[in-house]
Structures are given as C-alpha cells and as structure tokens.
Length: 245
Image (tube, rainbow, N blue to C red; front, top):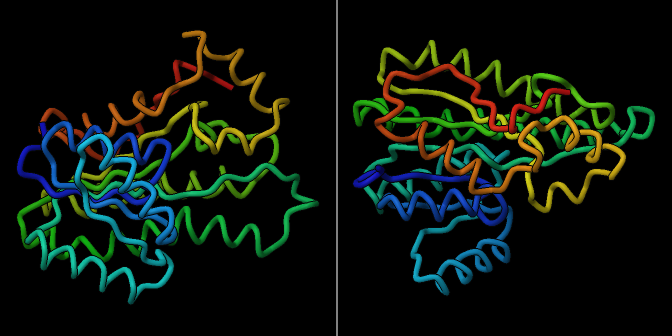
C-alpha cells in the first residue's frame, strides 16, 4: 500500500510508533523513525534488525527548530523526498491541577503540540515541491471527552485536533492531506503511567470488551497514509472500540 513512499515517524521507538514503523515497512515504505535520545533509537533499531527490518533512525530535539530542519534536510539528501509524516511523539499526564507545575504543563504542550508544528513546518516545503503528501497526527479519545485529571494532556490533544483540521484546509490545495488518529485505551507503556482508578472505568465503557492494541492504531495510520484515503482530510479518526466517556 505504501510502495515507493518515504515516511518519517516520530515517537517511533516503542508502542504505537514502533508498531506503525513495522506496518509501514510491511507495506514497502522507506521508513525513518525518530526517538527522544540515541539510546532509545539504537534499541529500537536493534529490535527491528532482529526481525530483518531495516529503517533509518534519528533523535533530534523536536523543540529545537534548527535541529529539526537539519535532520529533515539530511533525510531529503539521503532519500530524495518525504511523502508521509506521522507526528506520534508525545507524553501523557495524570496529576491533579493543584499538583501540576507550570514547567510540567509547558513540557506537555511543547512536545505534544509545538513539536508537531516544528516537524510539519519543516516537511511541508518538500511535500509541496514533490506535488503532495500526507501528514498524520496522534490525537486521543480525551481530545473529545477530556479526562478527570492530568489536564495538560487533553488540552494538548484538543490543540492537535485544531491544528489537524486547520492545516487540512490550508494545505489541501497543495495536495497535502492532514488527518489525525484518536486512540482509545491502548496497551502501551504509556498506559502504565495512569492510575487503575482512571483506566478501569474507561475499559468498562468499551463495547468491544477490550483495550486496543498498538496494531489497531497502526492499521488506522496505514489506511490514512494510503491511496485508499485519497479523499479524506481534516478528519479525527477515533480508534477506541466505540468507548464513550
């Protein structure tokens, strides 16, 4: 489904991101994963190598505009183009507002929102030059319903939705589609950061009777990145088992 395409996946060293890397490779894309540090990138590349999966790997500071631009330029020099950007890097939160510091709130916004802006701004000129592309963002079910604590996380995901819908309108004339996937409760290590009293009630709202797996979310990214979604843009695709909270 992605033969001949070049894709960057941020937050690609674990969980949903790593599963998306694998699925994109299965569908014959050239994939470059981004991680937060060299150690995590090296670890992910080693895991993939054990499965005979070869991808590129970088670890730029996504909040450093110059570093992002330089890394994107390196990818252009090596691969010649960028067709797909998956903005998946992010962090969650679960503290009550009284216990959340300004610095903690700012850290969430910086990675979950500002980093998406930085990555998108860096790749758009190359996508325009290449005649189009696909930008996919990781949102969340809490971008629709909120959550009972950790206000920074749903706030950031509400912003991701607004960015997605607005850029879809702005970039559509350049044949650049912009969509987001909003996962529900998903079996990743991020889930372990949330208290049981928050997770168990959420699971009870899922009519399919289970939490999601990383492959469930990766499948949605694959669909939206593929020609099958060629007339879909500006959408927030919920992948949550019909959970409503």
